[in-house]
Image (cartoon, rainbow, N blue to C red; front, top):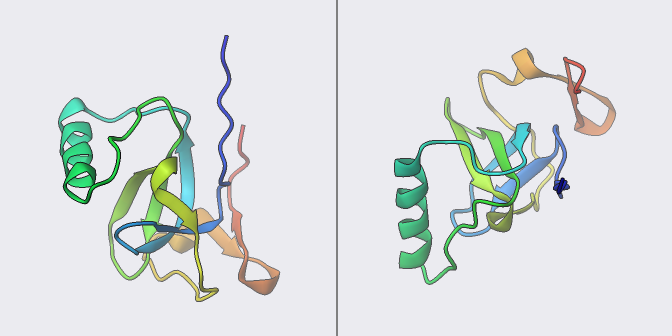
Amino acid sequence: MQFTQAKFNIGQVVQHKHYGFRGVIFDVDFEYSLDEKWYQEASKAMQRMGQPAINKKQPFYHILTDGSEHESYVSEQNLELAKTGKPVRHDSIDQWFTIGFGGQYKPRFSIN
């Protein structure tokens, strides 16, 4: 059995390498788990920007997107740690996290 290790953790603030939006991670899938239509559209968008196709066999992160009501689903290859320490503004932050010392996002639920 092969195990995948995620580069980023729940509660970390990340940003999309190409689109620039930021957000806080609230869940991780260790490989792609949405429908094929979404995957095809996302891969085409990356290829139009001259980026490699999205590999399904990598971690994908569920992200509360800063400044919106939306959640994003982003492959690890397209994420990096956020370059700013500004708080993430999202209506669901309090549902998922408490804000700890230094602005760290602490999950409200235990992670198995």
